[in-house]
Image (tube, rainbow, N blue to C red; front, side):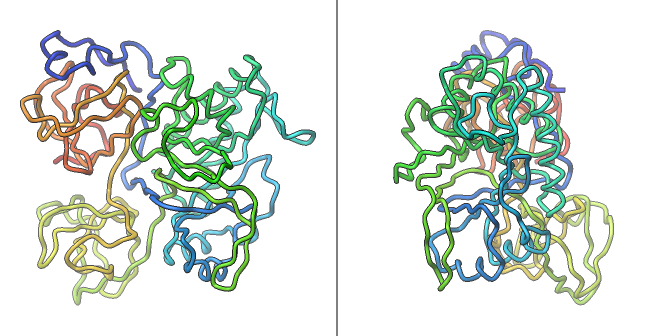
Length: 437
């Protein structure tokens, strides 16, 4: 469990700045931990996206590669989903991901008791709100897995507009979304919420620091004002969901034509986690390729892959140099192979759109945590992460003791943060399955 972080000495608090003095003392909320399985990684989308009621056919998605959009939102399930999804299969996911598109999974779960959706809406029962949020997340995970969306994916629960002036309704929504977030986290998925700026998003912002509700990892707002900016949203401070954790649906239903294909869409901008998939490549070596337990030749061989065989790559990370590259591929089985003998785009560097192997966890400090150039307060400060931001961890190592732990997290940008203020599973030691630096 995500145990409470213990108090630290005044000296350590002063060394880190204001962050430690305001660290949470007793509750798992609002920053609950994520229980990633070993092969997990997360995938970002930075740029324009669109969503449709029914997932377009693969041929339509291929035609739309000429559009400015790079992500597509699809409704993977939920009792309030209104459109059939004949195209939305694992084969479709594999085809569309290779084009390459980022996929945004949307789950149309139960709605607020005071929803504006009208008759026929399946709504939250206030006395069972948390339980129903948990059940919705469990079904969303089942639907995501059935079409090949892997742990580490962000799944967005769709909470349509409702009356923001009814306190009991507000509480039911927040308890439902708490159950949603905690169950996704328990199973290794990130929690996203799609909400109207003036109801669900407003209430999530008001509860951002509340120890009564779990905080989702990403917020996708609906505000059809034609402005795609991910900053300066009304009533949502810029230091909330501040580091690659926002999406905005800025234009509603309209037709667009690209590549000779017309679709009815909503337009979005994203800088947030979306779905993670495995991508198929071929082994290019002339002899069997060793898959190891870590990204270097000194790790034990777990299995071998025959020349020309298909392997499923989840993400890429740095490791020991082999020939012209130090990039290694993490496979769906949680093993590692050198990228030099894999049919990715580059034999010298990372190959887009394969994501880098990073595991995000929320910052638990009430204000911010300093990012440093090394694993200790003697290293210079190179930036900060505000409360609730996602610290995208690549690996862990021992450094200066802060509070109950000597563990420091190396982030994807090369900076370091003390593990004491990050919602990793273990508060005192290394956290599985984060690798060692």
